[in-house]
Image 1 (cartoon, protein in one colour):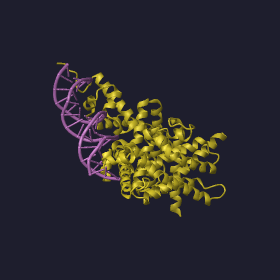
Image 2 (image 1 turned 90 degrees about the vertical axis):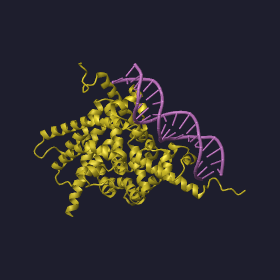
Image 3 (image 1 turned 135 degrees about the horizontal axis):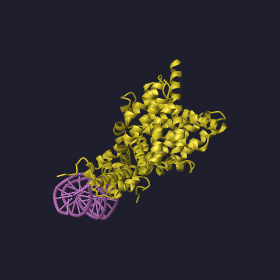
Image 4 (image 1 turned 60 degrees about the vertical axis):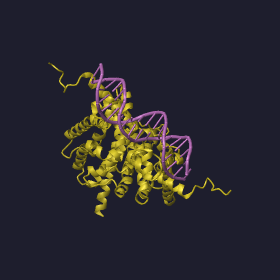
Length: 228
Length: 228
DNA sequence: GTCTATAGCTTGATAGAC
DNA sequence: GTCTATCAAGCTATAGAC
Protein backbone atom coordinates (compact mmCIF):
# COMPACT_ATOMS: atom_id res chain seq x y z
CA UNK A 1 0.00 0.00 0.00
CA UNK A 2 2.60 2.56 1.01
CA UNK A 3 4.61 2.72 -2.22
CA UNK A 4 7.63 4.90 -2.67
CA UNK A 5 6.29 8.01 -4.40
CA UNK A 6 7.46 8.00 -8.03
CA UNK A 7 8.38 11.68 -7.79
CA UNK A 8 10.94 10.81 -5.13
CA UNK A 9 13.45 8.54 -6.91
CA UNK A 10 15.49 6.13 -4.89
CA UNK A 11 18.94 7.10 -3.78
CA UNK A 12 20.61 4.47 -5.96
CA UNK A 13 18.78 5.55 -9.09
CA UNK A 14 19.71 9.14 -8.54
CA UNK A 15 23.34 8.17 -8.13
CA UNK A 16 23.34 6.22 -11.37
CA UNK A 17 21.77 9.13 -13.19
CA UNK A 18 24.43 11.49 -11.89
CA UNK A 19 27.20 9.05 -12.83
CA UNK A 20 25.93 8.99 -16.38
CA UNK A 21 25.81 12.77 -16.50
CA UNK A 22 29.34 13.02 -15.10
CA UNK A 23 30.70 10.49 -17.57
CA UNK A 24 28.94 12.09 -20.52
CA UNK A 25 30.17 15.53 -19.52
CA UNK A 26 33.75 14.32 -19.36
CA UNK A 27 33.73 12.38 -22.62
CA UNK A 28 31.74 14.93 -24.65
CA UNK A 29 34.26 17.54 -23.53
CA UNK A 30 37.16 15.40 -24.70
CA UNK A 31 35.82 14.11 -28.02
CA UNK A 32 32.72 16.11 -28.97
CA UNK A 33 29.20 14.76 -29.28
CA UNK A 34 29.76 12.57 -32.31
CA UNK A 35 33.09 11.25 -31.07
CA UNK A 36 31.58 9.52 -28.08
CA UNK A 37 29.34 6.46 -27.96
CA UNK A 38 26.62 5.58 -25.49
CA UNK A 39 28.58 2.46 -24.67
CA UNK A 40 31.68 4.46 -23.79
CA UNK A 41 29.67 6.75 -21.53
CA UNK A 42 28.05 3.82 -19.75
CA UNK A 43 31.40 2.11 -19.30
CA UNK A 44 32.97 5.27 -17.86
CA UNK A 45 30.01 5.61 -15.52
CA UNK A 46 30.12 1.96 -14.51
CA UNK A 47 26.52 1.56 -15.61
CA UNK A 48 24.62 -0.30 -18.29
CA UNK A 49 24.17 1.34 -21.70
CA UNK A 50 20.44 0.71 -21.62
CA UNK A 51 20.13 3.07 -18.68
CA UNK A 52 20.87 6.02 -20.92
CA UNK A 53 17.56 5.37 -22.64
CA UNK A 54 15.86 4.74 -19.32
CA UNK A 55 16.93 8.00 -17.71
CA UNK A 56 17.24 10.38 -20.62
CA UNK A 57 15.53 8.88 -23.65
CA UNK A 58 18.59 8.80 -25.89
CA UNK A 59 22.06 10.12 -26.55
CA UNK A 60 20.94 13.54 -27.70
CA UNK A 61 18.71 14.09 -24.69
CA UNK A 62 21.61 13.10 -22.44
CA UNK A 63 23.68 15.79 -24.14
CA UNK A 64 20.99 18.37 -23.44
CA UNK A 65 20.78 17.25 -19.83
CA UNK A 66 24.53 17.75 -19.43
CA UNK A 67 24.24 21.34 -20.62
CA UNK A 68 21.13 21.98 -18.55
CA UNK A 69 22.57 20.77 -15.27
CA UNK A 70 25.20 23.45 -14.74
CA UNK A 71 23.89 26.22 -16.96
CA UNK A 72 21.34 27.45 -14.47
CA UNK A 73 23.81 27.32 -11.58
CA UNK A 74 26.43 29.30 -13.47
CA UNK A 75 24.04 32.01 -14.53
CA UNK A 76 22.53 32.42 -11.07
CA UNK A 77 26.06 32.91 -9.78
CA UNK A 78 26.73 35.56 -12.41
CA UNK A 79 23.52 37.41 -11.62
CA UNK A 80 24.42 37.35 -7.93
CA UNK A 81 27.82 38.92 -8.61
CA UNK A 82 26.26 41.54 -10.82
CA UNK A 83 23.64 42.42 -8.23
CA UNK A 84 26.31 42.61 -5.56
CA UNK A 85 28.40 45.19 -7.43
CA UNK A 86 25.27 47.10 -8.39
CA UNK A 87 24.26 47.29 -4.75
CA UNK A 88 27.62 48.73 -3.77
CA UNK A 89 27.92 51.17 -6.67
CA UNK A 90 26.85 54.79 -6.88
CA UNK A 91 23.93 55.98 -9.02
CA UNK A 92 26.03 55.75 -12.19
CA UNK A 93 26.32 51.99 -11.61
CA UNK A 94 29.41 49.77 -11.46
CA UNK A 95 32.39 50.38 -13.75
CA UNK A 96 32.76 48.49 -17.04
CA UNK A 97 35.60 46.44 -15.60
CA UNK A 98 33.53 45.49 -12.56
CA UNK A 99 30.71 44.39 -14.84
CA UNK A 100 32.98 42.34 -17.08
CA UNK A 101 34.60 40.80 -14.04
CA UNK A 102 31.19 39.77 -12.72
CA UNK A 103 30.67 37.97 -16.00
CA UNK A 104 33.99 36.12 -16.04
CA UNK A 105 34.84 35.63 -12.38
CA UNK A 106 32.25 32.91 -11.66
CA UNK A 107 33.92 30.74 -14.28
CA UNK A 108 37.27 31.12 -12.59
CA UNK A 109 35.83 30.37 -9.20
CA UNK A 110 33.90 27.30 -10.29
CA UNK A 111 36.77 26.05 -12.42
CA UNK A 112 39.19 26.39 -9.52
CA UNK A 113 37.07 25.07 -6.69
CA UNK A 114 34.14 23.26 -8.30
CA UNK A 115 35.96 20.09 -9.27
CA UNK A 116 36.58 18.33 -12.58
CA UNK A 117 32.91 18.37 -13.51
CA UNK A 118 32.93 22.12 -13.90
CA UNK A 119 36.17 22.03 -15.86
CA UNK A 120 34.68 19.53 -18.29
CA UNK A 121 31.51 21.55 -18.60
CA UNK A 122 33.42 24.72 -19.50
CA UNK A 123 35.52 22.84 -22.00
CA UNK A 124 32.37 21.51 -23.59
CA UNK A 125 30.90 25.01 -23.77
CA UNK A 126 34.09 26.11 -25.51
CA UNK A 127 33.55 23.58 -28.24
CA UNK A 128 29.85 24.17 -28.68
CA UNK A 129 30.34 27.90 -28.95
CA UNK A 130 32.55 27.46 -31.99
CA UNK A 131 30.53 24.77 -33.74
CA UNK A 132 27.86 25.78 -36.26
CA UNK A 133 25.90 22.65 -35.40
CA UNK A 134 25.26 23.86 -31.85
CA UNK A 135 26.85 27.27 -31.45
CA UNK A 136 23.87 29.28 -32.57
CA UNK A 137 20.81 27.58 -31.20
CA UNK A 138 21.98 25.77 -28.09
CA UNK A 139 24.16 28.60 -26.83
CA UNK A 140 21.39 31.13 -27.32
CA UNK A 141 19.01 29.01 -25.32
CA UNK A 142 21.24 28.89 -22.26
CA UNK A 143 23.15 32.16 -22.42
CA UNK A 144 21.20 34.87 -24.21
CA UNK A 145 19.33 35.96 -21.07
CA UNK A 146 22.50 36.42 -19.01
CA UNK A 147 24.27 38.07 -21.95
CA UNK A 148 21.50 40.64 -22.32
CA UNK A 149 21.44 41.31 -18.59
CA UNK A 150 25.17 41.93 -18.66
CA UNK A 151 25.10 44.12 -21.78
CA UNK A 152 22.29 46.17 -20.26
CA UNK A 153 24.50 46.94 -17.26
CA UNK A 154 27.31 48.02 -19.60
CA UNK A 155 25.01 50.24 -21.59
CA UNK A 156 23.66 51.87 -18.46
CA UNK A 157 27.18 52.87 -17.46
CA UNK A 158 28.33 53.84 -20.98
CA UNK A 159 25.10 55.12 -22.57
CA UNK A 160 26.79 56.51 -25.66
CA UNK A 161 27.77 53.03 -26.89
CA UNK A 162 26.01 51.79 -30.02
CA UNK A 163 24.13 48.50 -30.13
CA UNK A 164 26.57 47.12 -32.68
CA UNK A 165 29.63 47.93 -30.56
CA UNK A 166 27.98 46.36 -27.54
CA UNK A 167 27.22 43.08 -29.26
CA UNK A 168 30.62 42.83 -30.92
CA UNK A 169 32.23 43.41 -27.55
CA UNK A 170 30.27 40.47 -26.23
CA UNK A 171 31.39 38.43 -29.23
CA UNK A 172 35.09 39.17 -28.66
CA UNK A 173 34.81 38.57 -24.93
CA UNK A 174 32.97 35.35 -25.53
CA UNK A 175 35.60 34.06 -27.95
CA UNK A 176 38.52 34.85 -25.67
CA UNK A 177 36.73 33.44 -22.65
CA UNK A 178 35.66 30.11 -24.08
CA UNK A 179 39.04 29.43 -25.66
CA UNK A 180 40.53 29.93 -22.22
CA UNK A 181 38.36 27.30 -20.64
CA UNK A 182 38.76 24.85 -23.51
CA UNK A 183 42.23 24.22 -22.05
CA UNK A 184 43.63 22.68 -25.23
CA UNK A 185 47.29 23.00 -24.31
CA UNK A 186 47.96 25.13 -27.36
CA UNK A 187 49.51 28.05 -25.50
CA UNK A 188 51.71 25.64 -23.54
CA UNK A 189 53.31 24.51 -26.76
CA UNK A 190 53.43 27.93 -28.35
CA UNK A 191 55.11 29.49 -25.33
CA UNK A 192 57.43 26.60 -24.64
CA UNK A 193 55.93 26.20 -21.18
CA UNK A 194 56.00 29.86 -20.15
CA UNK A 195 52.19 29.97 -20.09
CA UNK A 196 49.88 27.12 -19.18
CA UNK A 197 46.34 26.50 -20.44
CA UNK A 198 45.30 25.44 -16.99
CA UNK A 199 46.55 28.62 -15.31
CA UNK A 200 43.14 30.18 -15.03
CA UNK A 201 44.30 32.68 -12.41
CA UNK A 202 46.73 34.26 -14.88
CA UNK A 203 43.89 34.71 -17.31
CA UNK A 204 41.43 36.13 -14.83
CA UNK A 205 44.15 38.61 -13.85
CA UNK A 206 44.40 39.81 -17.46
CA UNK A 207 41.15 39.17 -19.32
CA UNK A 208 38.76 41.68 -17.69
CA UNK A 209 41.20 44.57 -18.08
CA UNK A 210 42.01 43.52 -21.63
CA UNK A 211 38.36 43.40 -22.70
CA UNK A 212 37.49 46.61 -20.86
CA UNK A 213 40.28 48.50 -22.63
CA UNK A 214 39.13 47.12 -25.98
CA UNK A 215 35.56 48.08 -25.26
CA UNK A 216 36.30 51.63 -24.14
CA UNK A 217 38.62 52.13 -27.08
CA UNK A 218 35.86 51.05 -29.45
CA UNK A 219 33.50 53.59 -27.90
CA UNK A 220 36.09 56.36 -28.11
CA UNK A 221 36.82 55.69 -31.76
CA UNK A 222 33.15 55.81 -32.59
CA UNK A 223 32.77 59.16 -30.86
CA UNK A 224 35.87 60.58 -32.57
CA UNK A 225 34.58 59.41 -35.92
CA UNK A 226 31.18 60.98 -35.43
CA UNK A 227 32.68 64.33 -34.52
CA UNK A 228 34.70 64.52 -37.69
CA UNK B 1 56.49 2.08 -73.70
CA UNK B 2 55.73 5.77 -73.16
CA UNK B 3 53.68 5.51 -69.97
CA UNK B 4 52.10 8.52 -68.31
CA UNK B 5 54.57 9.44 -65.58
CA UNK B 6 53.09 8.52 -62.19
CA UNK B 7 54.24 11.81 -60.74
CA UNK B 8 52.01 13.68 -63.16
CA UNK B 9 48.47 12.56 -62.33
CA UNK B 10 45.79 12.73 -64.98
CA UNK B 11 43.50 15.74 -65.11
CA UNK B 12 40.46 13.67 -64.13
CA UNK B 13 42.12 12.15 -61.11
CA UNK B 14 43.25 15.51 -59.88
CA UNK B 15 39.74 16.86 -60.19
CA UNK B 16 38.30 13.95 -58.17
CA UNK B 17 40.87 14.48 -55.47
CA UNK B 18 39.99 18.15 -55.20
CA UNK B 19 36.27 17.36 -55.12
CA UNK B 20 36.83 15.07 -52.18
CA UNK B 21 38.85 17.72 -50.38
CA UNK B 22 36.16 20.34 -51.03
CA UNK B 23 33.37 18.07 -49.82
CA UNK B 24 35.31 17.01 -46.73
CA UNK B 25 36.16 20.61 -45.89
CA UNK B 26 32.51 21.63 -46.11
CA UNK B 27 31.11 18.73 -44.10
CA UNK B 28 33.82 18.66 -41.43
CA UNK B 29 33.18 22.38 -40.92
CA UNK B 30 29.46 21.76 -40.44
CA UNK B 31 29.49 18.64 -38.28
CA UNK B 32 33.03 18.08 -36.96
CA UNK B 33 35.29 15.15 -37.76
CA UNK B 34 33.29 12.48 -35.98
CA UNK B 35 29.95 13.78 -37.22
CA UNK B 36 30.73 13.07 -40.86
CA UNK B 37 31.06 9.75 -42.64
CA UNK B 38 33.28 8.81 -45.54
CA UNK B 39 30.16 7.91 -47.45
CA UNK B 40 28.64 11.35 -46.91
CA UNK B 41 31.82 13.01 -48.13
CA UNK B 42 31.93 10.85 -51.24
CA UNK B 43 28.29 11.54 -51.99
CA UNK B 44 28.77 15.29 -51.62
CA UNK B 45 31.78 15.06 -53.92
CA UNK B 46 29.95 12.90 -56.44
CA UNK B 47 32.65 10.28 -56.12
CA UNK B 48 32.92 6.74 -54.86
CA UNK B 49 33.67 6.16 -51.16
CA UNK B 50 36.50 3.81 -52.02
CA UNK B 51 38.39 6.72 -53.57
CA UNK B 52 38.97 8.24 -50.17
CA UNK B 53 41.21 5.31 -49.38
CA UNK B 54 42.77 5.45 -52.83
CA UNK B 55 43.75 9.12 -52.65
CA UNK B 56 44.34 9.71 -48.97
CA UNK B 57 44.63 6.37 -47.19
CA UNK B 58 41.71 6.90 -44.83
CA UNK B 59 39.35 9.35 -43.21
CA UNK B 60 41.90 10.77 -40.80
CA UNK B 61 44.46 11.37 -43.52
CA UNK B 62 41.80 13.14 -45.56
CA UNK B 63 41.18 15.41 -42.58
CA UNK B 64 44.87 16.24 -42.38
CA UNK B 65 44.96 16.93 -46.11
CA UNK B 66 42.08 19.40 -45.74
CA UNK B 67 44.00 21.35 -43.11
CA UNK B 68 47.24 21.17 -45.05
CA UNK B 69 45.85 22.49 -48.31
CA UNK B 70 45.03 26.03 -47.21
CA UNK B 71 47.26 26.41 -44.16
CA UNK B 72 50.39 27.14 -46.13
CA UNK B 73 48.60 29.61 -48.43
CA UNK B 74 47.13 31.54 -45.53
CA UNK B 75 50.39 31.85 -43.68
CA UNK B 76 52.35 32.94 -46.75
CA UNK B 77 49.77 35.66 -47.21
CA UNK B 78 50.18 36.77 -43.61
CA UNK B 79 53.96 36.85 -43.90
CA UNK B 80 53.64 38.92 -47.07
CA UNK B 81 51.46 41.52 -45.32
CA UNK B 82 53.84 41.65 -42.38
CA UNK B 83 56.85 42.14 -44.63
CA UNK B 84 55.02 44.81 -46.54
CA UNK B 85 54.30 46.93 -43.46
CA UNK B 86 57.81 46.33 -42.17
CA UNK B 87 59.24 47.59 -45.44
CA UNK B 88 57.23 50.81 -45.20
CA UNK B 89 57.83 51.43 -41.51
CA UNK B 90 60.55 53.47 -39.82
CA UNK B 91 63.37 51.90 -37.79
CA UNK B 92 61.06 51.37 -34.82
CA UNK B 93 58.97 49.03 -36.96
CA UNK B 94 55.24 49.01 -37.69
CA UNK B 95 52.71 49.94 -35.01
CA UNK B 96 51.01 47.26 -32.90
CA UNK B 97 47.75 47.85 -34.71
CA UNK B 98 49.42 47.47 -38.10
CA UNK B 99 50.97 44.20 -36.96
CA UNK B 100 47.70 42.84 -35.60
CA UNK B 101 45.93 43.89 -38.77
CA UNK B 102 48.49 42.01 -40.84
CA UNK B 103 47.59 38.94 -38.82
CA UNK B 104 43.81 39.24 -39.18
CA UNK B 105 43.33 40.96 -42.54
CA UNK B 106 44.25 37.98 -44.74
CA UNK B 107 41.38 36.04 -43.17
CA UNK B 108 38.93 38.80 -44.05
CA UNK B 109 40.24 39.03 -47.57
CA UNK B 110 40.18 35.30 -48.25
CA UNK B 111 36.83 34.87 -46.56
CA UNK B 112 35.31 37.66 -48.65
CA UNK B 113 36.84 36.90 -52.03
CA UNK B 114 38.21 33.36 -51.81
CA UNK B 115 34.91 31.51 -52.14
CA UNK B 116 33.06 29.07 -49.92
CA UNK B 117 36.05 26.80 -49.55
CA UNK B 118 37.90 29.38 -47.51
CA UNK B 119 34.84 30.08 -45.40
CA UNK B 120 34.50 26.40 -44.58
CA UNK B 121 38.19 26.14 -43.82
CA UNK B 122 38.06 29.02 -41.34
CA UNK B 123 34.99 27.59 -39.70
CA UNK B 124 36.79 24.28 -39.31
CA UNK B 125 39.78 26.03 -37.78
CA UNK B 126 37.41 27.68 -35.32
CA UNK B 127 36.21 24.32 -34.12
CA UNK B 128 39.60 22.68 -33.97
CA UNK B 129 41.05 25.55 -31.98
CA UNK B 130 38.54 24.98 -29.19
CA UNK B 131 38.66 21.19 -29.13
CA UNK B 132 41.12 19.44 -26.81
CA UNK B 133 41.30 16.52 -29.24
CA UNK B 134 42.93 18.70 -31.92
CA UNK B 135 43.37 22.19 -30.51
CA UNK B 136 46.78 21.64 -29.01
CA UNK B 137 48.72 19.45 -31.40
CA UNK B 138 47.19 20.11 -34.80
CA UNK B 139 46.93 23.86 -34.35
CA UNK B 140 50.52 24.10 -33.14
CA UNK B 141 51.74 22.23 -36.18
CA UNK B 142 50.18 24.66 -38.65
CA UNK B 143 50.18 27.96 -36.78
CA UNK B 144 52.98 28.16 -34.22
CA UNK B 145 55.54 29.41 -36.76
CA UNK B 146 53.36 32.29 -37.94
CA UNK B 147 52.31 33.08 -34.38
CA UNK B 148 55.91 33.39 -33.27
CA UNK B 149 56.81 35.53 -36.26
CA UNK B 150 53.93 37.86 -35.41
CA UNK B 151 54.70 38.02 -31.70
CA UNK B 152 58.32 38.78 -32.48
CA UNK B 153 57.23 41.84 -34.49
CA UNK B 154 55.09 42.99 -31.57
CA UNK B 155 57.91 42.57 -29.12
CA UNK B 156 60.29 44.48 -31.33
CA UNK B 157 57.94 47.46 -31.30
CA UNK B 158 56.99 47.17 -27.60
CA UNK B 159 60.18 45.75 -26.06
CA UNK B 160 59.05 46.24 -22.46
CA UNK B 161 56.29 43.63 -22.82
CA UNK B 162 56.74 40.41 -20.84
CA UNK B 163 56.65 37.01 -22.45
CA UNK B 164 53.54 36.08 -20.53
CA UNK B 165 51.61 39.17 -21.63
CA UNK B 166 52.64 38.54 -25.22
CA UNK B 167 51.39 34.97 -25.27
CA UNK B 168 48.15 35.77 -23.47
CA UNK B 169 47.51 38.52 -25.98
CA UNK B 170 47.85 35.97 -28.72
CA UNK B 171 45.48 33.69 -26.84
CA UNK B 172 42.77 36.37 -26.53
CA UNK B 173 43.20 37.46 -30.13
CA UNK B 174 43.06 33.89 -31.28
CA UNK B 175 39.84 33.19 -29.37
CA UNK B 176 38.05 36.27 -30.65
CA UNK B 177 39.27 35.69 -34.20
CA UNK B 178 38.30 32.06 -34.58
CA UNK B 179 34.88 32.56 -33.05
CA UNK B 180 34.30 35.25 -35.65
CA UNK B 181 35.02 32.91 -38.52
CA UNK B 182 33.06 30.05 -37.05
CA UNK B 183 29.96 32.01 -38.14
CA UNK B 184 27.59 30.15 -35.86
CA UNK B 185 24.73 32.65 -36.05
CA UNK B 186 24.84 33.20 -32.30
CA UNK B 187 25.26 36.96 -32.43
CA UNK B 188 22.43 37.21 -34.96
CA UNK B 189 20.05 35.73 -32.41
CA UNK B 190 21.48 37.58 -29.45
CA UNK B 191 21.26 40.94 -31.19
CA UNK B 192 17.91 40.29 -32.78
CA UNK B 193 19.42 40.79 -36.22
CA UNK B 194 21.37 43.99 -35.47
CA UNK B 195 24.68 42.15 -35.98
CA UNK B 196 25.30 39.30 -38.38
CA UNK B 197 27.84 36.48 -38.01
CA UNK B 198 28.66 36.72 -41.67
CA UNK B 199 29.41 40.45 -41.56
CA UNK B 200 33.15 39.99 -41.57
CA UNK B 201 33.78 43.60 -42.59
CA UNK B 202 32.20 44.89 -39.37
CA UNK B 203 34.52 42.66 -37.41
CA UNK B 204 37.65 43.58 -39.28
CA UNK B 205 36.74 47.23 -38.66
CA UNK B 206 36.66 46.61 -34.90
CA UNK B 207 38.85 43.64 -33.97
CA UNK B 208 42.39 45.01 -34.59
CA UNK B 209 41.71 48.20 -32.63
CA UNK B 210 40.02 46.24 -29.86
CA UNK B 211 42.92 43.82 -29.46
CA UNK B 212 45.53 46.56 -29.75
CA UNK B 213 43.89 48.56 -26.97
CA UNK B 214 43.72 45.45 -24.78
CA UNK B 215 47.36 44.67 -25.46
CA UNK B 216 48.67 48.16 -24.75
CA UNK B 217 46.55 48.38 -21.61
CA UNK B 218 48.05 45.13 -20.38
CA UNK B 219 51.56 46.49 -20.91
CA UNK B 220 50.73 49.75 -19.15
CA UNK B 221 49.28 47.97 -16.13
CA UNK B 222 52.35 45.84 -15.83
CA UNK B 223 54.61 48.88 -15.89
CA UNK B 224 52.45 50.72 -13.34
CA UNK B 225 52.52 47.71 -11.08
CA UNK B 226 56.29 47.35 -11.26
CA UNK B 227 56.82 50.99 -10.35
CA UNK B 228 54.75 50.72 -7.19
C1' DG C 1 16.16 0.15 -11.48
C1' DT C 2 19.10 -2.78 -13.65
C1' DC C 3 20.64 -5.83 -17.05
C1' DT C 4 20.77 -9.31 -21.06
C1' DA C 5 19.98 -10.04 -25.61
C1' DT C 6 19.41 -8.58 -29.89
C1' DA C 7 17.22 -6.13 -33.80
C1' DG C 8 18.35 -3.28 -37.48
C1' DC C 9 21.60 -0.22 -39.27
C1' DT C 10 25.76 2.18 -40.38
C1' DT C 11 30.51 2.50 -39.98
C1' DG C 12 35.65 2.57 -42.17
C1' DA C 13 38.17 -0.16 -44.92
C1' DT C 14 39.48 -3.28 -48.73
C1' DA C 15 39.80 -7.00 -52.40
C1' DG C 16 39.34 -7.33 -56.92
C1' DA C 17 36.70 -6.58 -61.50
C1' DC C 18 36.92 -3.32 -65.11
C1' DG D 1 41.19 5.71 -61.72
C1' DT D 2 36.87 4.12 -60.74
C1' DC D 3 33.45 1.20 -58.98
C1' DT D 4 30.95 -3.03 -56.98
C1' DA D 5 30.60 -6.01 -53.41
C1' DT D 6 31.39 -7.12 -49.03
C1' DC D 7 33.51 -7.71 -44.37
C1' DA D 8 33.96 -7.32 -39.55
C1' DA D 9 33.03 -4.16 -36.23
C1' DG D 10 30.51 -0.93 -34.03
C1' DC D 11 26.44 1.87 -33.52
C1' DT D 12 21.66 3.41 -31.13
C1' DA D 13 17.71 1.84 -29.43
C1' DT D 14 14.48 -1.40 -27.37
C1' DA D 15 11.85 -5.50 -25.65
C1' DG D 16 11.51 -8.01 -21.86
C1' DA D 17 13.55 -10.93 -17.86
C1' DC D 18 14.69 -10.17 -13.22
